[in-house]
Figure 1: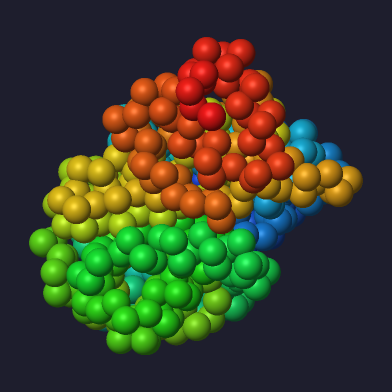
Figure 2: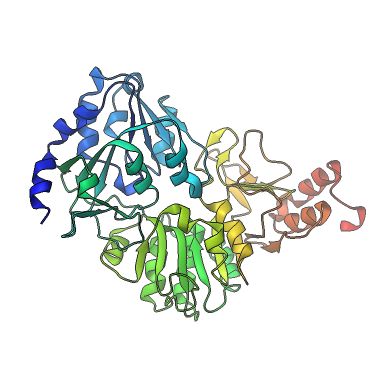
Length: 445
């Protein structure tokens, strides 16, 4: 039915990128859906363009437009959420980070005055209704496309078809140009190094707090994945999933028969996510799977939606925290690492959920490149470090030395609790700092 329209809009990547002019704002969308053939074609035009501003986020491979020695003279990269690749682009001097609460990102596109001149993205092949699925990254893509002056889709047959809510596909009538790409394999994001003994200790403390019928959110990183692995091996049952990022651990839990979603007050029986990244195991699992549902991020990360899900369990990482209970999950001083993402949304939403709990987990220490061991629990955050979770919002904090709940504690009670889960080698030093800051009582010892 739509084949004639498809053919009329079909073009080459080289022709499609002629839509980009100097000074334009171009959107590469998000994570696995960044363009490939279109990116290469745009890079080939780099020398004739200036001041092209490109948005992306959770970048999984180095864009071709960023590879040239003088790339910054032609393109400026803007990342909504930093990955290791984004950090390399910033270090090259041609990129910047845009601080956001991820749940607000669709609204930024609806409300912001700056234009989206061209959007180019990978999508799954068109279905017989004329729709291209946003596949693994529904996130905020519908709002980008609604704002864009020119929409170019790059079809990749390897992207899975993912069922979803409104805003998880684009109809051919809203597409300006179609490029049939090179069908590269979907970029994979591994779970990282095998879990350490510290990871296992932290994970075990958290798993003991999860009831049957709980609804899960897992953040990216080793510890949340280790928690997921332990859940898959546990006796827990009838779990649900409502998460920002869908990761391999959820597949393991589902295949172990632990996920039914039957206790979810909304989206009963469905595992809901804003974007997914992992291994081929994950991509094969979500393909045309009615148990899985993609959704815009202003739905998945909305604290009002999260609060409706009883026994909501949120599990996320941190870089460090201070004795006041401020959690930093974004930077090491002035060195930016990731972003707020949805962590704060889930910390707040889980606490609003009946029976809900949010867990921030981390190892008590970190070893630097020079071999020095430093405490992740510090008197005050390093100047330049970002407060991801304000002290008033943080709930459960977990290290290999224990678990504490900061809700309702005064400053000295907080200091006492936080020091109790610090590495023993640093506790006396932390006590001395707490005394100088007047948040330690003489009878604490």
